[in-house]
Length: 104
Image (tube, rainbow, N blue to C red; front, side, top):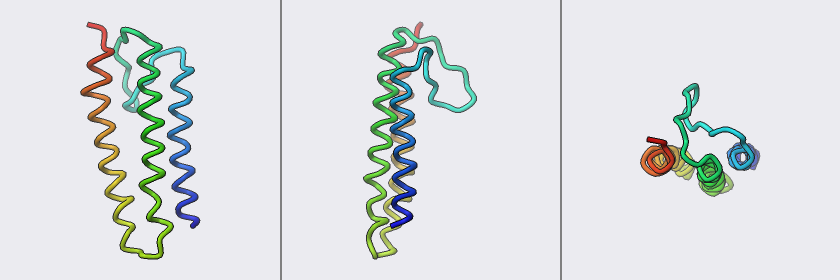
């Protein structure tokens, strides 16, 4: 139970990050310690980033539900699920969001 509560706090952090993206006055970066490219439309770009992070957080929480089960073998679901979720978020960012909002 404690493990799932900690898992939920981390998921809520990602949702909070998404909410913060909605109100950001400058482009929100995805990668750590890199400069954000020049954005065509700041408001819709930040809204897309907000959707990405809020969805990431919600899915993160759902993936953690097996932590509530007594079967310890189910721990593999959150471990692999987060790995695939992170890869999916990277693909969505680079192939959809970045291509759509990068100023050429």
